[in-house]
Length: 286
Image (cartoon, helix red, strand yellow):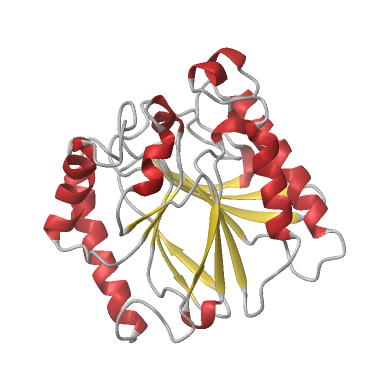
């Protein structure tokens, strides 16, 4: 989305501000934290944050021109956290520079967790998908500065997180940049399949003997479109996949039938996804 307001980014900022204010009001809770300390409203930011080449430092001009000036000038509450993950474009710059951008930006590292909802019933698990996604392309992996151990470190961390379920958690939402089902990632079938295979291995291991599914939903971007799919994950079962990567420029191409029967909905238009969550359901509105 980070294009200094261009490619409809300014328009989407207005929509985001309106929906965030509405979501804040609907919680009927003063402030943005419940008594448990969990957040009631947050923005899930799915990566490729600053185009075209990331940022070199946390105070780079584009942090202001592509983020603060675009969103907070139109009424987006400045205390709603942006739970953010890295995308491949962010690696063209200095990825770690985004770890110390001041609040409400929230990215303490390439992977982290955050509780949401009254009573902390939601656990957001943010991961960095680029190391695995580009494993199949050694040249691109090297260009992005992704070492061979980065993907292994990523999955070892996730195995540890999924090994225990915190008390009070009803829903677990995994957030990354790259999709595991795609209707618009033309020419990236091998990368999509590789990420899906690696994630399937981790989720299937976590599902063994577990009462609850390891995660209930995977939210991602990369595809410049909006999509809902239900992926059949071997050893786990159905996993809802929400693609929200249409914060500015949309995908140039689309092939009818891509993603197969798992794709339930795809829209090539700028927009956001609003999710309302309670103890019984997650409702996603595109």
